[in-house]
Length: 560
Image 1 (spheres, rainbow, N blue to C red):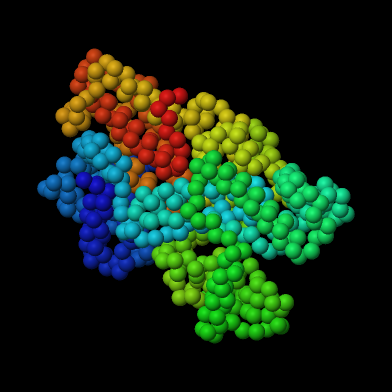
Image 2 (cartoon, rainbow, N blue to C red; image 1 turned 180 degrees about the horizontal axis):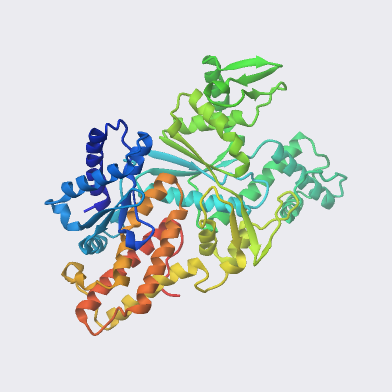
């Protein structure tokens, strides 16, 4: 039985009765959460507070008491009553539920039977979503800021797949424009040094050693063939540099366990005619006007703070023009939901993109934009300065080489998307309880060791349904059972908010409660029945640890 789902239905019925009793006109969404303290019960709803708030009613206590009575009446005498031990009101007006242990014993049997499928919900019904993330300009190595976007984007994609979405991961390659021209000039300047050609390094050029390496590669292949830096050379050096850098980007992403289904090149996309097609659509809708020799989009009609230039007076496109066409192309490819993951410097870009989406006749909820805040790398207490242009940065490659892909991923997921992240490399390298990823992986490895030992001693249970789970009655065992029961709610919250850090926080709690259980109670004992029950319990913990780590893209060691 999905107790949260069943309770939600019952609460909804009682809320309707409260609406009639107190003449409330609006009903709230039902939210069930675990209370902050075990003394407060196992599940709690703020339905009474929400009812009074949205209906502007002062009858808070009366509403909570009414709901509590109706809930008791609705549950009494039903099959569901065997799962609810107590219903009570907690100040100011929370309605809390305390479960009978049968709830948790059934949960363990369900996990044993269905494995990770016990927490799955097919919300999407096979709909298609495209998650576009990283999309870093191919002008240099991926930095830790890009790495955080990569890890979060991949975890979000995994979560969406878990809930039934058909996911496509896409990297939009911004491989033309001024930044590529600067890259081309930077590479040519280094090439000119080798070829004995006079060419001044651009003032805003890219200074990393990778630029010198690319220039040396070109020189070794072409010698001093390129005497001048004309448009032809600019195109060659720019695209050559992009191809080399993209290979390195793909390798770094692969080594951290992130793979894309598509790399879409803006350079190639611009030559498909789709940009011109989108402009014609907007023009036919009367949404483009001429002013000061430029073409303007009437974006203020769709919620933007000002109209936007699409075609400059010199005939070139602004940044938003190909982006509008690219997003339209996503819809035309049959995607029901577009998710863009951007850095904080793109926050102001959201209203204009939403305006374009509305102008194309798309619903607001068909596009989600997630802003991932930056990450600061620390070595102990000392922050590492970063600047891509001046070659002062920590690359993703350096982080992977120093702390490994699992630890890198874990630390990139430790905060919510909108929060700045501090990444302490020295802490990440330690193998101790202070290192959270080590702490979680060690819980899984420890369980694997116990299960292996029980098998060697021939103390494994034959079938979970034949085990007397009522023997699991110690506080540490009940606490572990209760945390296991939270997993479906945590997954759904991560899905609804697109925040993978919620799963990571849950993993830390589950590991902590498991370690607390293990330090007090032996799993393999002289009591065969108790041993069997505890093996079923830790096997359930192992299943959830494994599934949650897999969703985050982190490996699941059986030995450490």
